[in-house]
Amino acid sequence: MSSKFPDHFLWGGAMAANQVEGAYQTDGKGLSTSDLQPQGIFGTITPRVDGDSGIKDVAIDFYHHYPQDIALFAEMGFKCLRTSIAWTRIFPQGDEETPNEAGLAFYDRLFDEMARYGIQPLVTLSHYEMPYGLVKQYGGWGNRKTIGFFEHYARTVFERYKHKVQHWLTFNEINMSLHAPFTGVGLAQDSSKSEIYQAIHHQLVASARAVKACHEIVPGGKIGNMLLGGILYPLSCKPEDVLETQRQNRDWLFFGDVQARGGYPAYMRRYFRENGIQVEITAEDQQALRETIDFISFSYYMSGCVTTDEAQNNTARSNILNMVPNPHLASSEWGWQIDPVGLRYLLNVLYDRYQKPLFIVENGLGAKDRVEADGSINDDYRINYLNDHLVQVAEAIDDGVEVMGYTSWGPIDLVSASKAEMSKRYGFIYVDRDDAGNGSLERRRKKSFYWYRDVIQSNGNSLKNKA
Ligand code: BG6
Image (cartoon, rainbow, N blue to C red; front, side):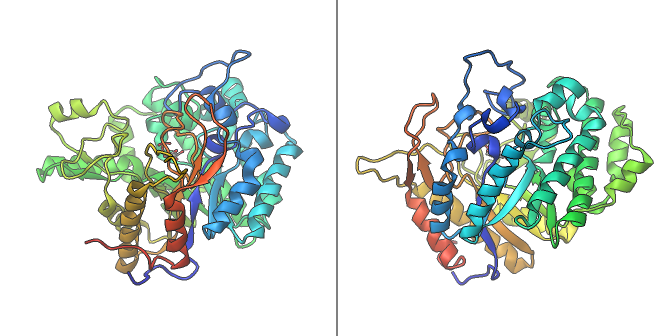
């Protein structure tokens, strides 16, 4: 395939502090909400009792293995690595005035190591975690004060890393708070819609304040939002199904609309009114929201369908996002429907809507891998998944969509977010650790490692368009 990817396309991988670093109490780190969710992002708080341990406490121990791991990413030719800063390494409780120097120094070392290989960091300020202290003392994002604590954290890291990090993201999958309120905004799972949207509003204001701070502090810095790109299709062409699909797509596009257009869309005001949802939005908040992001970033794993048929909806309620399965698509071992064409469609939808550069910051296949007797891991299923999605990215670029880069999820095996498992593997690099935490943590190149190296080296020329 001849390359449609622009020069300077940011090829790389993406991960998050709480899924790789481990060292959950090292160098003064405070407890984060993620440290209290040993079952994953849909779990609520599990108080930690002495002697308790969770898979994320060590994760893949990236905190101590990062030089080796960055060298492997460099061997694949990465131009970019997306990771997050653990807020609790910088402000252990969340409300301190002075940051924790040991935490700041860790990310200095990490970014310096990446710079040695010319790998640009793409840094998420908050990836599915916040200081638990802010939840306990203030009620998480339900409290307006959290906006100020977050802004202080954002300004601190912008000042510290302004000459090392050019690309930033505010909140990972900000739209997930509707499904996982504790993970997203530090609220109980059974919170009311008004409470959840109020907390989301505070987070949107905080995001806009971080955008402003980034523009003030980081010379030439660019900052984006991060959406779970859960694109939905109508299951049928019945007009009611089509309209309901538009409504449900707006549930998540709403976040992009506020962040990219600088204010609440009219359809949301109607939704709040008709559902008795009360959200306090001050004139100052409205002013803050006018500071819009420079680019849109999103994750993409699957698409789903929407119907107004209640019987089919009831069956679908068992899966995490209540999505009705598409009869034309196959699924991964975890039931996620595989839809490469959906990525091209989504890229076009987002570009038509916002006309801002797009960054695919997560995409990949979670699967069980087998280590053969000779030590090899032949993950052709992963290669096929990634190849087919990247072919569609190339098509979208040809459609005229401006795509800044592609960071596949979990370039090295890590702890899964939804179920906190090691066995759901995404990596080009295998990590010897199982769901019970056994294993040497040894790293091993999979077949996909060499495949991705060739894709990057050829700037996408080696991809195979099978159509
Ligand atoms: C995204 C998250 O939802 O999907 C990641 O931003 C997560 O943190 C990824 O790991 C894949 O989900 P899972 O549950 O397979 O880890």
